[in-house]
Structures are given as C-alpha cells and as structure tokens.
Length: 118
Length: 106
Picture: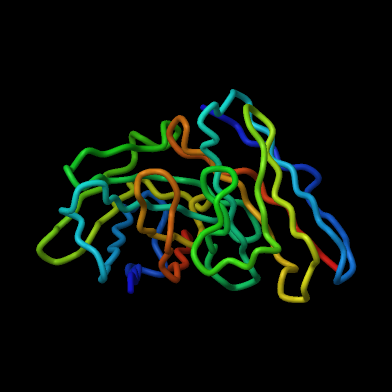
C-alpha cells in the first residue's frame, strides 16, 4: 500500500522560505518510472501543479513558479522536499505530495495547510 | 502551457441522473493524456480516470471517460449521493496542468 504524508510549518511570514517534506512508504523513488509531485490548492480554488522529481533525479517545475521552487529527494529516507522562497499571502494553500508515474498522480497525501501571514 | 477549460463551473443534478462533464484543452492531446479526479469537501483528490478512458483501480463502472484531441468528457451514468463533489481534469501531454474544476451538486 502506497502512502504519503506532508509535513512542515502551518504558518510562515511573508518573504520567508517554506520547506515541506513528503514522507512516503510502499514504493521506492529509485525504481525506474517512479516520480513524486507536489500540487497545491488555495482555499476554495483549483489544483495547481508545482514540481515533480523523477527516480533518476530529473526535475520539472511549474514555469510560473520555477524561480522560487526547488525539489529534492532523499531515497534512503523515503522523503521528497519542496522549498519555496519569498512566500506571499497568495501562496496560502493546502500543499499535497503525490506518487506519480510522471503522468497522473495517484495516490495523494492528506495535504498540509500553509498560511502566509505576518 | 496547455490550458484546460472545464465549463460550466457548477452542474446541478438529482440522484439517478446522468452527468456529463466537459474538459477542453488549448492544444491537442493526441495521446489522450487526460486524467480525471474527484474531490469531496475536506478530502484529498482521488484518481478516477487516466489515459482519457481507463478507470483507475476500484473505481465503479458508472464512471467513464472519453474524448480525443482537445475535447474530453467524464460521464457518471447514474449519480449516487456520494458522487456529488468537484471533478478536475488534468493533462500530462506537456508538463502538467489542471482544469478549474466542475462542481456537481444536487
């Protein structure tokens, strides 16, 4: 059974850097074809894909946020970390990580709500 | 960037009715690179359909997907009370993007 869980701060101040960790089980991110993505959802709004990391450490970013995002993996810890710099109140959202075959996302973690406020 | 348009934003049905949801892509997705997700209030999105028409594991057969090119459809054959939710399409033909969602309400 594949499970994922996001962790990180619930509240960050504007201009700060957000660091979120996705801890997963039930699969290996060193296995060919496996990837993990991050998706966010502002309250009451739609889903937005942020970043994805492949088993071979190749990385993809949402072009509109590329300059602010970094995604890394620690295969030995079964973790994927997303950092987002220069946080703004518009970045307030629930952040999800999800297992992927680099096409669709399934399953998803439970999500973690991050509020950006001073 | 491929933009996905889901319209209308809200559809109203009664249980037992057939629901047809639309997702239109700004560029052709020749490989049918569309997935559909269901999200209930306070819950995580759940994969329903991938490859435009393939049901994910455990998804009831009242859910079906179709389409090609730029126009894709999710059909719910007979709405059950638990089907009232928000549905998102997602493309993976060129990077990854989601539609704005369609809320299916009673």
